[in-house]
Length: 416
Image 1 (spheres, helix red, strand yellow):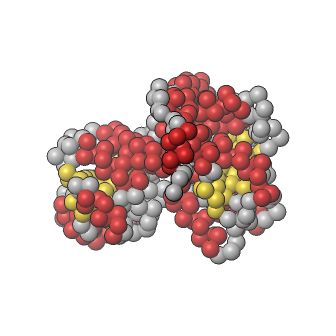
Image 2: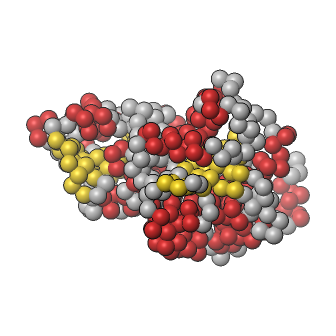
Image 3: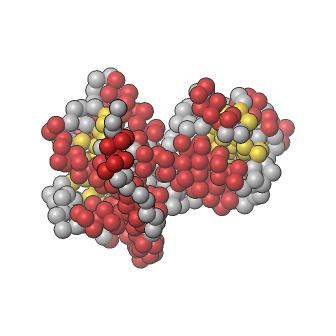
């Protein structure tokens, strides 16, 4: 459905979306606490903020928080497949300029990003850097005056860093992904749990005793490996970084090359942010019935072209699960067509962990607004004061109290 100011699949889903939004907001106490401190001053009054994030119930809490603080909000999805259509309808009804629906073509996805940029936002909030890349290199937006941006995910940070290395970065970008209260919890606990959720929804098979191959042992890979081991899986890790490989080995996982793991694995989860992690050659050596899932941001980690275009037969056997029949009648099962399985085949991260990430986002937006004139055109860490405040809010929301240093301890710790 199209209308001036928004484009969603079905505006009649708004009531259902409202219920999901209310559930998420009730469990995002950290973000609510942040809002409580800022509501009266309305620091985003008169500012247009463009969001390119997965349109989920948790994201809706952030978008309406920004609107409540005075911002004009325009939003599109951070992935063609990750929109929850009821949430998009609810946001449209709530006054957000939202351009999002599930199952977009690449052309539609790009058009939605362009629709957000057409609102001339002065601050961009991105997940994967697609909006930032368009703002930098699409001639239609060469005159866009952006004060600064934030980036949510590892893959997006890599892309923005490449723009910076090329000397073409036009405005400061705060790397929210590097905040301790983001990657230690969102990437590890959030993706770990939501990946298992996607596996159980799509396959509904026993995880205990199965050989699960986790490609990549960054924060996401650590979380997926830990959750799968917690369910009784025999976890194998593949890595290209020797330090991370050593860490995985000393954490008690088998570590090997993908060429070897391909013959042993029953479930494969890619978590690298790299291209060509599971290739045609790997797939052809897998056992009959192997399940492949990707939770990296882009659909480049698994050779989906081979599976979806070159298989003898492809059929959807369960929601979010395609059966691909390859040589000699062997079957390989692909989740979410190689897209973000935890968002396409499940609902993404739980609200409690996203409250931390989105508190970082909201406070970083305000930091840019106040300090953009003093910030270099470069990548910036989330200020430590924000990271610490989010951690304190998280502890308070969970009912955890901690000690504070006494004067004597502070003096001792700073003394030579």
